[in-house]
Length: 132
Image (cartoon, rainbow, N blue to C red; front, side, top):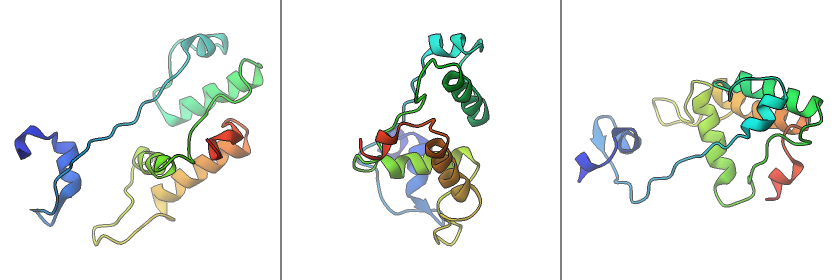
């Protein structure tokens, strides 16, 4: 059965070379963008980095194309947690250190939290992201 599971998923269940659990469900994140809005804002393609994404969202907002270029569902079940984990990874980190101690408020974990707060502070994310 293990060989039928993608290594990227299976690796999450291995610690010190030993498999401690098996996944029963694989989840994935989707990212949708509106290429028409991106082009109206003066860009040729969808963003490839978080920095490019913020630049494009700021332009979309500044040009009045869309009031809130980012929307989310952080209030839904594990929505906020999933978003935080993938953003932590996008900033080059993990949520636990090699000794399985949480490292939420340092390095990439802190950058992920700051990024989410920035989306709200700059009004790039809809405030309904907190209640949806």
